[in-house]
Image 1 (cartoon, rainbow, N blue to C red):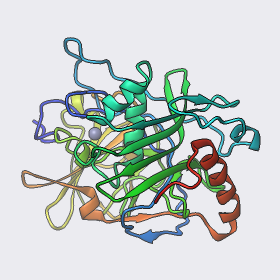
Image 2 (cartoon, rainbow, N blue to C red):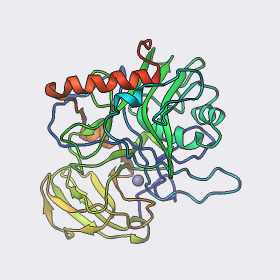
Image 3 (cartoon, rainbow, N blue to C red):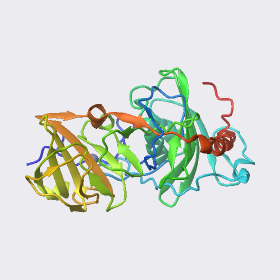
Image 4 (spheres, rainbow, N blue to C red):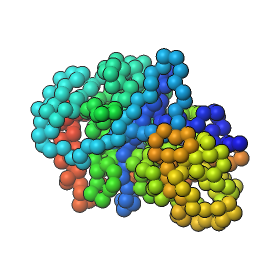
Length: 361
Ligand SMILES: [Zn+2]
Protein backbone atom coordinates (compact mmCIF):
# COMPACT_ATOMS: atom_id res chain seq x y z
CA UNK A 1 0.00 0.00 0.00
CA UNK A 2 1.29 3.26 -0.93
CA UNK A 3 0.89 6.62 0.36
CA UNK A 4 2.73 8.28 -2.30
CA UNK A 5 -0.17 9.96 -3.81
CA UNK A 6 -2.55 10.35 -1.04
CA UNK A 7 -4.82 12.60 -2.93
CA UNK A 8 -5.24 10.45 -5.89
CA UNK A 9 -4.98 6.94 -6.99
CA UNK A 10 -3.15 8.10 -10.01
CA UNK A 11 0.52 8.00 -10.17
CA UNK A 12 2.24 11.17 -10.68
CA UNK A 13 0.95 13.09 -13.44
CA UNK A 14 3.34 14.70 -15.63
CA UNK A 15 3.95 18.09 -15.18
CA UNK A 16 1.57 20.19 -16.55
CA UNK A 17 -1.52 21.56 -16.21
CA UNK A 18 -2.32 24.85 -16.94
CA UNK A 19 -5.68 25.90 -17.19
CA UNK A 20 -8.52 24.46 -15.44
CA UNK A 21 -10.30 22.01 -17.50
CA UNK A 22 -7.50 21.66 -19.91
CA UNK A 23 -5.51 18.63 -19.05
CA UNK A 24 -2.69 19.50 -21.22
CA UNK A 25 0.32 17.99 -19.98
CA UNK A 26 3.04 20.03 -19.82
CA UNK A 27 6.13 18.83 -20.05
CA UNK A 28 7.87 21.89 -20.01
CA UNK A 29 10.81 21.97 -18.15
CA UNK A 30 13.16 24.37 -17.50
CA UNK A 31 16.49 23.52 -18.01
CA UNK A 32 18.87 24.10 -15.56
CA UNK A 33 22.26 23.46 -15.16
CA UNK A 34 24.07 23.07 -12.35
CA UNK A 35 27.28 22.94 -11.16
CA UNK A 36 26.92 24.21 -7.94
CA UNK A 37 29.24 26.87 -8.14
CA UNK A 38 27.13 28.82 -6.29
CA UNK A 39 26.88 32.20 -6.78
CA UNK A 40 23.60 32.12 -5.31
CA UNK A 41 21.54 34.28 -3.47
CA UNK A 42 19.14 33.02 -1.05
CA UNK A 43 15.57 33.19 -1.68
CA UNK A 44 14.59 35.70 -4.09
CA UNK A 45 11.60 37.71 -4.21
CA UNK A 46 9.42 38.06 -7.11
CA UNK A 47 11.26 38.49 -10.09
CA UNK A 48 11.65 41.04 -12.38
CA UNK A 49 12.35 38.94 -15.22
CA UNK A 50 14.10 35.93 -16.21
CA UNK A 51 14.75 33.59 -18.79
CA UNK A 52 14.46 30.08 -19.11
CA UNK A 53 14.34 27.51 -21.55
CA UNK A 54 11.85 25.17 -22.30
CA UNK A 55 11.92 21.74 -21.79
CA UNK A 56 9.87 18.98 -21.69
CA UNK A 57 9.22 16.87 -19.20
CA UNK A 58 7.88 13.76 -18.94
CA UNK A 59 7.25 12.68 -15.66
CA UNK A 60 5.15 10.56 -13.70
CA UNK A 61 2.63 8.77 -15.59
CA UNK A 62 -0.12 10.62 -17.08
CA UNK A 63 -3.61 9.68 -16.40
CA UNK A 64 -5.36 7.89 -19.14
CA UNK A 65 -6.87 10.19 -21.63
CA UNK A 66 -10.56 10.18 -21.69
CA UNK A 67 -13.10 11.13 -24.23
CA UNK A 68 -12.11 13.99 -26.37
CA UNK A 69 -9.64 15.56 -24.10
CA UNK A 70 -6.58 16.84 -25.77
CA UNK A 71 -3.75 14.43 -25.86
CA UNK A 72 -0.73 15.17 -23.83
CA UNK A 73 1.70 17.29 -25.63
CA UNK A 74 5.31 16.39 -25.55
CA UNK A 75 7.55 19.22 -25.42
CA UNK A 76 10.97 18.49 -26.48
CA UNK A 77 13.90 19.10 -24.53
CA UNK A 78 15.75 21.96 -25.52
CA UNK A 79 18.35 21.48 -28.06
CA UNK A 80 19.11 24.96 -28.73
CA UNK A 81 22.50 26.49 -28.79
CA UNK A 82 23.33 28.55 -25.82
CA UNK A 83 23.46 31.72 -27.70
CA UNK A 84 22.19 33.00 -30.93
CA UNK A 85 24.38 34.53 -33.48
CA UNK A 86 23.69 38.11 -34.31
CA UNK A 87 22.13 36.85 -37.48
CA UNK A 88 19.54 34.99 -35.62
CA UNK A 89 18.43 38.09 -33.91
CA UNK A 90 18.14 40.07 -37.04
CA UNK A 91 15.43 40.21 -39.50
CA UNK A 92 12.89 39.90 -36.86
CA UNK A 93 9.76 41.55 -37.67
CA UNK A 94 8.07 42.62 -34.62
CA UNK A 95 4.78 42.53 -36.13
CA UNK A 96 1.96 41.17 -34.27
CA UNK A 97 1.03 37.76 -33.46
CA UNK A 98 3.43 35.66 -35.41
CA UNK A 99 6.45 37.13 -37.01
CA UNK A 100 9.10 34.69 -38.16
CA UNK A 101 12.74 35.60 -38.29
CA UNK A 102 15.48 34.16 -40.37
CA UNK A 103 16.45 31.62 -37.76
CA UNK A 104 12.95 30.31 -37.59
CA UNK A 105 12.02 31.86 -34.29
CA UNK A 106 8.45 32.98 -34.19
CA UNK A 107 7.17 35.62 -31.88
CA UNK A 108 3.77 35.18 -30.38
CA UNK A 109 2.32 38.20 -28.64
CA UNK A 110 -1.10 37.73 -27.18
CA UNK A 111 -3.34 39.22 -24.56
CA UNK A 112 -4.47 36.67 -22.04
CA UNK A 113 -8.02 35.56 -22.42
CA UNK A 114 -9.74 33.19 -20.06
CA UNK A 115 -6.76 30.98 -19.31
CA UNK A 116 -3.22 30.41 -20.40
CA UNK A 117 -4.18 27.29 -22.33
CA UNK A 118 -6.92 29.07 -24.23
CA UNK A 119 -4.73 32.04 -24.85
CA UNK A 120 -2.10 29.93 -26.56
CA UNK A 121 -4.63 27.71 -28.26
CA UNK A 122 -6.34 30.69 -29.82
CA UNK A 123 -3.02 32.08 -31.02
CA UNK A 124 -1.79 28.79 -32.43
CA UNK A 125 -4.10 25.85 -32.71
CA UNK A 126 -1.37 23.39 -33.64
CA UNK A 127 1.25 24.18 -31.02
CA UNK A 128 -0.79 26.05 -28.43
CA UNK A 129 -0.92 23.14 -26.02
CA UNK A 130 2.82 22.58 -26.09
CA UNK A 131 3.54 26.28 -25.81
CA UNK A 132 1.25 26.60 -22.84
CA UNK A 133 2.93 23.66 -21.15
CA UNK A 134 6.47 24.90 -21.65
CA UNK A 135 5.60 28.47 -20.86
CA UNK A 136 3.99 27.45 -17.60
CA UNK A 137 7.25 25.89 -16.45
CA UNK A 138 9.04 29.15 -16.95
CA UNK A 139 7.05 31.15 -14.51
CA UNK A 140 5.50 28.74 -12.05
CA UNK A 141 8.11 29.65 -9.47
CA UNK A 142 6.75 33.14 -9.21
CA UNK A 143 3.10 33.09 -10.08
CA UNK A 144 0.20 30.66 -10.07
CA UNK A 145 -0.73 30.68 -13.72
CA UNK A 146 -3.98 28.89 -13.08
CA UNK A 147 -5.29 31.43 -10.64
CA UNK A 148 -3.41 34.66 -10.91
CA UNK A 149 -3.80 35.70 -14.52
CA UNK A 150 -5.90 38.81 -14.99
CA UNK A 151 -7.58 40.63 -17.75
CA UNK A 152 -5.03 42.76 -19.54
CA UNK A 153 -2.14 40.40 -18.86
CA UNK A 154 -0.01 39.70 -21.89
CA UNK A 155 2.20 36.81 -22.93
CA UNK A 156 5.02 37.10 -25.40
CA UNK A 157 7.10 34.15 -26.55
CA UNK A 158 9.96 33.63 -29.02
CA UNK A 159 9.65 30.01 -30.03
CA UNK A 160 9.94 27.45 -32.76
CA UNK A 161 8.40 24.07 -33.37
CA UNK A 162 10.61 21.01 -33.00
CA UNK A 163 10.19 17.39 -33.96
CA UNK A 164 8.14 16.62 -30.91
CA UNK A 165 6.96 19.88 -29.50
CA UNK A 166 8.23 23.41 -29.18
CA UNK A 167 11.17 25.22 -27.69
CA UNK A 168 11.10 28.65 -26.17
CA UNK A 169 14.18 30.83 -26.18
CA UNK A 170 12.70 33.86 -24.49
CA UNK A 171 9.37 34.78 -22.99
CA UNK A 172 7.65 37.42 -20.95
CA UNK A 173 4.51 37.79 -18.92
CA UNK A 174 3.04 41.18 -18.18
CA UNK A 175 1.23 40.50 -14.94
CA UNK A 176 -1.38 42.72 -13.37
CA UNK A 177 -1.31 40.63 -10.22
CA UNK A 178 2.44 41.12 -9.76
CA UNK A 179 2.43 44.62 -11.19
CA UNK A 180 5.44 43.83 -13.32
CA UNK A 181 6.60 42.03 -16.43
CA UNK A 182 8.45 38.78 -15.84
CA UNK A 183 10.99 37.89 -18.49
CA UNK A 184 12.83 34.65 -19.08
CA UNK A 185 15.96 34.29 -21.22
CA UNK A 186 17.38 30.91 -22.00
CA UNK A 187 21.12 30.70 -21.48
CA UNK A 188 23.71 28.06 -20.66
CA UNK A 189 26.52 29.08 -18.35
CA UNK A 190 29.99 27.88 -19.31
CA UNK A 191 30.22 25.43 -16.46
CA UNK A 192 26.74 23.99 -16.79
CA UNK A 193 25.49 20.78 -18.33
CA UNK A 194 22.10 22.23 -19.16
CA UNK A 195 20.82 25.58 -20.19
CA UNK A 196 18.31 27.31 -17.99
CA UNK A 197 16.17 30.41 -17.87
CA UNK A 198 17.47 33.56 -16.29
CA UNK A 199 16.20 36.94 -15.32
CA UNK A 200 17.70 40.00 -16.89
CA UNK A 201 19.91 40.63 -13.88
CA UNK A 202 21.55 37.25 -14.24
CA UNK A 203 19.61 35.45 -11.54
CA UNK A 204 18.23 32.05 -12.46
CA UNK A 205 14.47 31.86 -12.40
CA UNK A 206 14.22 28.31 -11.12
CA UNK A 207 15.16 27.88 -7.49
CA UNK A 208 17.24 24.99 -6.19
CA UNK A 209 16.70 23.13 -2.99
CA UNK A 210 19.43 23.82 -0.45
CA UNK A 211 19.25 20.16 0.48
CA UNK A 212 18.74 18.57 -2.91
CA UNK A 213 18.24 14.94 -3.92
CA UNK A 214 20.19 15.63 -7.13
CA UNK A 215 23.28 17.70 -7.73
CA UNK A 216 22.71 18.01 -11.43
CA UNK A 217 19.44 17.81 -13.32
CA UNK A 218 17.80 19.41 -16.27
CA UNK A 219 14.77 21.02 -14.78
CA UNK A 220 12.06 20.78 -12.19
CA UNK A 221 9.00 19.85 -14.14
CA UNK A 222 6.50 19.81 -11.35
CA UNK A 223 6.31 21.69 -8.09
CA UNK A 224 4.09 20.45 -5.32
CA UNK A 225 1.77 23.40 -5.79
CA UNK A 226 1.31 22.72 -9.48
CA UNK A 227 -1.00 19.78 -9.11
CA UNK A 228 -3.15 18.97 -6.14
CA UNK A 229 -3.22 15.31 -7.11
CA UNK A 230 0.55 14.98 -7.21
CA UNK A 231 2.35 14.63 -3.89
CA UNK A 232 5.91 15.34 -4.86
CA UNK A 233 8.39 17.39 -6.79
CA UNK A 234 9.59 16.04 -10.15
CA UNK A 235 13.09 16.56 -11.48
CA UNK A 236 13.72 15.78 -15.10
CA UNK A 237 17.11 14.12 -15.32
CA UNK A 238 18.75 11.34 -17.35
CA UNK A 239 18.55 7.77 -16.12
CA UNK A 240 21.51 7.03 -13.89
CA UNK A 241 21.88 10.42 -12.22
CA UNK A 242 23.29 9.91 -8.70
CA UNK A 243 20.51 10.41 -6.18
CA UNK A 244 21.33 11.67 -2.70
CA UNK A 245 19.97 11.58 0.80
CA UNK A 246 18.78 15.12 1.44
CA UNK A 247 19.26 14.71 5.19
CA UNK A 248 20.66 12.13 7.51
CA UNK A 249 18.31 9.37 8.50
CA UNK A 250 17.53 5.70 8.40
CA UNK A 251 16.33 3.76 5.38
CA UNK A 252 12.92 2.41 6.30
CA UNK A 253 12.16 0.43 3.14
CA UNK A 254 13.08 0.01 -0.49
CA UNK A 255 11.25 -1.19 -3.58
CA UNK A 256 7.69 -1.33 -2.31
CA UNK A 257 4.73 -1.05 -4.64
CA UNK A 258 7.14 -1.25 -7.53
CA UNK A 259 4.41 -1.40 -10.13
CA UNK A 260 3.72 2.27 -9.53
CA UNK A 261 6.84 3.43 -7.79
CA UNK A 262 9.40 1.45 -9.69
CA UNK A 263 12.58 1.01 -7.73
CA UNK A 264 12.30 3.26 -4.73
CA UNK A 265 13.80 4.26 -1.41
CA UNK A 266 12.26 5.70 1.74
CA UNK A 267 14.33 7.45 4.39
CA UNK A 268 13.14 8.60 7.80
CA UNK A 269 14.68 11.78 9.14
CA UNK A 270 15.20 12.23 12.87
CA UNK A 271 12.04 14.32 13.17
CA UNK A 272 9.94 11.51 11.71
CA UNK A 273 9.57 12.98 8.23
CA UNK A 274 9.67 10.37 5.48
CA UNK A 275 11.48 11.15 2.23
CA UNK A 276 10.53 9.04 -0.79
CA UNK A 277 12.50 8.66 -3.98
CA UNK A 278 10.61 6.98 -6.80
CA UNK A 279 11.23 5.60 -10.30
CA UNK A 280 14.91 4.86 -9.65
CA UNK A 281 17.00 2.76 -12.00
CA UNK A 282 18.87 1.25 -9.06
CA UNK A 283 19.03 1.44 -5.29
CA UNK A 284 22.24 1.38 -3.28
CA UNK A 285 20.88 1.09 0.24
CA UNK A 286 18.99 -1.44 2.36
CA UNK A 287 16.26 -1.09 4.94
CA UNK A 288 17.71 -0.37 8.36
CA UNK A 289 20.79 1.31 6.99
CA UNK A 290 21.77 4.72 8.30
CA UNK A 291 22.63 7.37 5.72
CA UNK A 292 24.11 10.81 6.01
CA UNK A 293 23.06 13.88 4.08
CA UNK A 294 24.66 13.74 0.65
CA UNK A 295 25.18 9.98 0.59
CA UNK A 296 24.30 8.36 -2.72
CA UNK A 297 21.27 6.14 -2.17
CA UNK A 298 20.71 5.08 -5.77
CA UNK A 299 20.40 6.37 -9.32
CA UNK A 300 17.47 8.10 -10.96
CA UNK A 301 15.52 6.23 -13.57
CA UNK A 302 12.26 5.76 -15.37
CA UNK A 303 10.79 2.72 -13.64
CA UNK A 304 7.23 2.13 -12.48
CA UNK A 305 4.55 4.48 -13.66
CA UNK A 306 6.73 7.09 -15.19
CA UNK A 307 6.50 8.55 -18.65
CA UNK A 308 10.05 9.75 -18.91
CA UNK A 309 13.36 9.79 -17.04
CA UNK A 310 12.91 11.74 -13.85
CA UNK A 311 13.08 11.62 -10.08
CA UNK A 312 9.93 11.96 -8.02
CA UNK A 313 10.88 13.29 -4.57
CA UNK A 314 8.24 13.39 -1.88
CA UNK A 315 8.04 14.26 1.82
CA UNK A 316 5.41 12.99 4.23
CA UNK A 317 4.91 13.51 7.93
CA UNK A 318 2.17 11.32 9.19
CA UNK A 319 -0.56 11.72 6.63
CA UNK A 320 0.54 15.14 5.60
CA UNK A 321 2.37 15.88 2.40
CA UNK A 322 5.08 18.45 2.94
CA UNK A 323 6.48 20.79 0.33
CA UNK A 324 10.21 20.17 -0.23
CA UNK A 325 10.60 23.88 -0.84
CA UNK A 326 9.39 24.67 2.66
CA UNK A 327 11.38 21.93 4.32
CA UNK A 328 14.67 22.22 2.50
CA UNK A 329 14.69 25.88 1.56
CA UNK A 330 15.79 27.26 -1.78
CA UNK A 331 18.52 29.30 -3.30
CA UNK A 332 19.10 30.88 -6.69
CA UNK A 333 22.11 30.59 -8.93
CA UNK A 334 23.46 33.53 -10.83
CA UNK A 335 25.78 34.45 -13.63
CA UNK A 336 29.37 34.93 -12.45
CA UNK A 337 30.87 38.40 -12.82
CA UNK A 338 33.23 37.22 -15.52
CA UNK A 339 30.40 35.99 -17.67
CA UNK A 340 28.11 38.96 -17.25
CA UNK A 341 29.15 40.71 -20.44
CA UNK A 342 28.46 37.67 -22.58
CA UNK A 343 25.16 37.17 -20.82
CA UNK A 344 24.10 40.77 -21.32
CA UNK A 345 24.84 40.58 -25.03
CA UNK A 346 22.81 37.42 -25.23
CA UNK A 347 19.91 39.07 -23.44
CA UNK A 348 20.06 42.06 -25.77
CA UNK A 349 19.74 39.77 -28.77
CA UNK A 350 16.83 37.94 -27.21
CA UNK A 351 15.15 41.20 -26.28
CA UNK A 352 15.43 42.28 -29.88
CA UNK A 353 13.93 39.00 -30.93
CA UNK A 354 11.15 39.34 -28.45
CA UNK A 355 10.52 42.94 -29.36
CA UNK A 356 10.78 43.55 -25.71
CA UNK A 357 13.83 45.73 -25.43
CA UNK A 358 12.08 48.48 -23.60
CA UNK A 359 9.48 46.36 -22.00
CA UNK A 360 7.62 47.97 -19.29
CA UNK A 361 8.62 46.72 -15.97
ZN1 LIG B 1 6.12 12.86 -9.47
